[in-house]
Amino acid sequence: MSDQKNIRKDFSNCTRQKITAFISLLEKSGEFKRKSYIPVNDASHFERFNYLAANDKVSIVYDTKAKKLSLTAKLSIAEKLAEYYQNNAAPEPQAANPAADGVEVIEAVLVYSPVEFNALEADIKPAKLKISEKLKQQKQQKQSTTPVRLKTVQQKAQAQKPYPQRQPQQKTASPNQPLPKTASFNPQPQNQPQSPPKQPPPQAQPKQSPQPKQSPQAQSNPQPKQPQQPRPPVRPQTQQKLLPPPAAIPKTHVKADVRLQEATRRLKKLLPAAFGFLSEQSKTDLTIGLMDIYNDQTRLSDYSVLLVPPYRGLERLIYDLQGAEGIVVKMIGQGFEKRDDGSYCLKSGYRKKINSIIYNEVLSALYTEYFVQRHYLTHSDNTANASTRIIRDITDAKAKFDNLLSIIEYNCKKLLEIGFSIKAVPKTD
Image 1 (cartoon, rainbow, N blue to C red):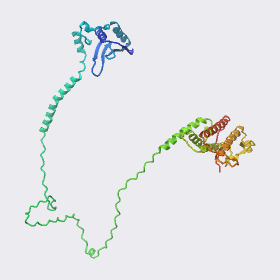
Image 2 (cartoon, helix red, strand yellow; image 1 turned 90 degrees about the vertical axis):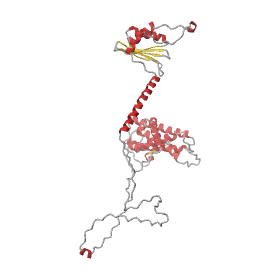
Image 3 (tube, rainbow, N blue to C red; image 1 turned 180 degrees about the vertical axis):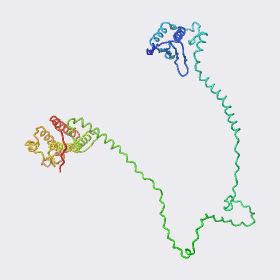
Image 4 (cartoon, rainbow, N blue to C red; image 1 turned 120 degrees about the vertical axis):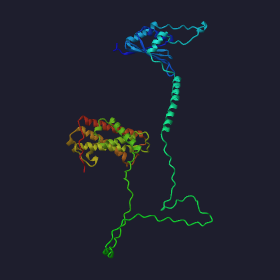
């Protein structure tokens, strides 16, 4: 039985008569020994009974407001308690008018015989005292202890010998010091001329140690006194110079860094294949374009300037891809030649040396996009029928930027398929 876990059984619509009959049956059964009882008080509307049944704890709680009974015990004991309550509890009182029968209605309470009550009183501690009774006892204790305490303190004060009061000593003037200036009291009569005030005697100088006597020769030939060098001025103790605290980072810079990191993560999602081919410079330029072009608060007269950083990143990518195959040029266009249809491809010498069709296609596509769009946006139209190259709507700038990212991702994916990787880029003179 000790290995079983406690369970709880709840019963609703429990009247006072049912609880009274149920508790009286438990007391008379002899199987349950009451250990404690907590009645209803001002702070709680729960009535609690605690029993022992074969060394197992049993808890019975009755909610007087909700009319709810809760039984907590081991499974076998809880079932027995439930059987006691359901089968042997007193029946519900009928809804009759007791006043019509001349019967006085009172609240049902637990009723025990004198013998039972004396037996319970010997085992159970008395219930908690009411608050008013406790306050009365505390007041009585304070009144009884306070005069004793005061009496003992007074006795201690009388037992101690008081210190002798020191009388203030009158100040007498010393013979070497003048009398202090006090109120204008003159003991001389008014008809006698007042004597002039005595001047204070000169203060006694400290005795100097006797100097050794000089010989007559030293007195006849006195040595010239050396001029004393002026002492350096005493400087106040210099305090340790503390470095000023570092200037706090402006909030705008912190926000800009956070935006840059978020834009970099977004760029990595947009270019999963090409992100490994991008250098730090290319990532920065493409990220700046992503931040500015997709910023809804950006208001410009010409949005073409927002495309300059992304195409600058494309230019750096082309340089890195050329350097990976040993193509070293000072200007990006020196490694390409123009076809008849207006597109560009690597020069024939580089094509023969590298011997890779995919590599040639990728470099040709990237440089063609760079030449067509970047030159168009950054240079003026000098033809006769020149038209403006201003981008007045930001949606046009977004379309060009998205097309650039798709071209970079598509061509870098082709390089991954052939196992191409960017090696250390050789330095140009």
